[in-house]
Length: 352
Image 1 (spheres, rainbow, N blue to C red):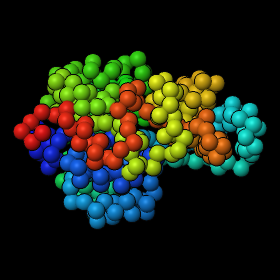
Image 2: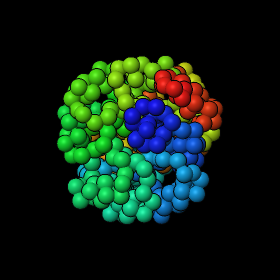
Image 3: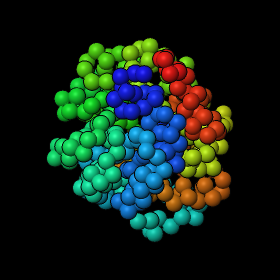
Image 4: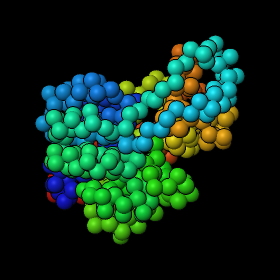
């Protein structure tokens, strides 16, 4: 058993990446019951919905699990940027019969705050992870006092060193291949970010805390390769997207099983922050990275939401965030426990 797995009470040091918008507690429980670390993403849940999900996990498993939060800064609405963004989308509104005047502006993802801290203190998850840095020190201290093992994502060596200095228990080295949102927080310069197998050994040399590899691993062979490069654990998300325990939409599932899945790109169209997904119509026609910018994260979502709904009703994902890592070859429509056991064949040890 690895040191990280032993410390967390796991059979294997495998973490199911938290994937907001495509999963709830069912996936978390299935992965944890299989001996790895299931994760629950909280960023898109209201406090009431999050409480319901936490109660469901508590009732379903006694195994360790991870509760994940975004900790981005909330920016004030920018009327000029919102207007420009809706003007750019106007041809699509006209095509799909959407009235932009009826679209309410708003944020779709909440940063970690007081209400979330209270829930951590009440439910005491074994692991709490953060994306986009860390929350303010007083809130982080309360999470640590709850007994949680704290993780956060780093996309550069500088971010890893910063996280270690701030007291995290382990760093997730998020390579450029990873699906979903980039976890960067010290710099927006994407050219500074590296692929997993370039980033992992550099972070290992730079910090003393355990390092978890994320991005590009899709099967047991990928897990073994990450461990051979010195990873203390491995985090995978895309591989789980077709599992029946997810809430992945029909159009997203279809895209993952099509030839289109071979082409992913970083895009900020859907939320206002770079994230990797399968290239679709809106990414091709507007360009995956928007210049001039749209509203800041996560406010770009509101203007696209009715287009997504209208297109999905017609059976296509032209305006949907089809999150996926570059390597989606291991994405299979099998129960999450079965997939977890297959992935964990990449670990070597007396129990495997």
